Length: 250
Length: 250
Image (cartoon, rainbow over all chains, first blue to last red; front, side):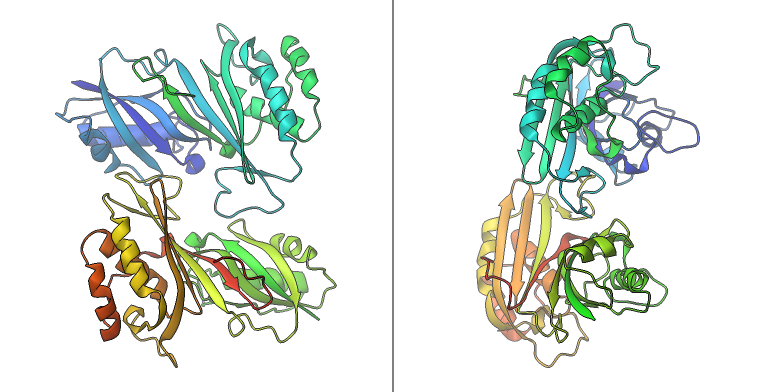
């Protein structure tokens, strides 16, 4: 029995999120079905992050075990043969049997992308949120600077999601402005439920001059929800980092 | 009665091409339906290029007439209100009643995009053709240099498409290599039926070392079809140029 850490990308448009649920298509469900066809027996696949319905991934991580004698180079091809074209395994690394994709994850990187334009674009409508101009990126950067660091992020958590602790460290909240696009890159040691889309919504509200960036530290302290959650389709899980990965600049 | 030159973008995935046909969804058909709803009467919309099933556009041009008192700035919003999200009118210019989008077009710009990679990418699979590495871009550039200029392009025409003349001037055939992507930019005073995808297929065959670029001039002279036609989904109509448009570098 070998254990692999899979890295996979998916267009989340057609799926009710990552996690298996009865009667709806989910990414985990489709992946477990492919794993079962490859292994010839039921094969649970555990993911690093339970992305919501409609959220995309370029670097989701999942644990896959197989009794077949496959090398790490063969695993992506073998699984992709049983996967639809909107889910692609692009890498596999052999890991120890005790590898746990959630517990062992050190950092996650999410990206929320806005397109600032008067008209929709038929080519990226499934992957970005289009907002009308103007958007004040400088103000968004000021707000972002208040949000990075170690904080109790319960103000940004979706209600009714009990956790041991609501303290997380937001290592980075970078705004990358390229042409009509604004990428909000969030890197943290963990995300509360709804936190990425809620932070993105708070920054957008600042960018639309509907929230003063100076108000952010106080809201964070008082654990008041600062901004609306943005739609799922603008969000993408870019990368999950583990101890054995080199420390790339991110 | 006012006449407008519309500039529109569409994701061609769901359509049986531009031109109206019975019993299938076409871009022209959907646009004429929107125009009819806006005008309150049947409203033919004539396009500059009859893109094939699955081909996309970022800069298709079409003629739209209306008896309603709309400004050029109002037309896109008014039409987009009746259009599905995979077709977007992003510009309208008022033109004379004698404007003819096909006859008056001076140049057209098509782009065919390859992605050179071992795995598919779920995000651009509808818009690029993925090919396995390696691809020899230098050899493709040598072939492209043989193809530009004024030639009889009947070797690159899909069979059974009678024309007065098969001579066209290919102003540009540029290869833009960005990361995993190779864009083939074709600018001509007109394209024969199938010519863009056939030229792209010829260049790809050269890039895969299955055709010697030195053989191109002879094949062109002997009017032999040099390469296979590539699939529709990698092709996009980028721009149609008219006399009144500033001569941008292209």
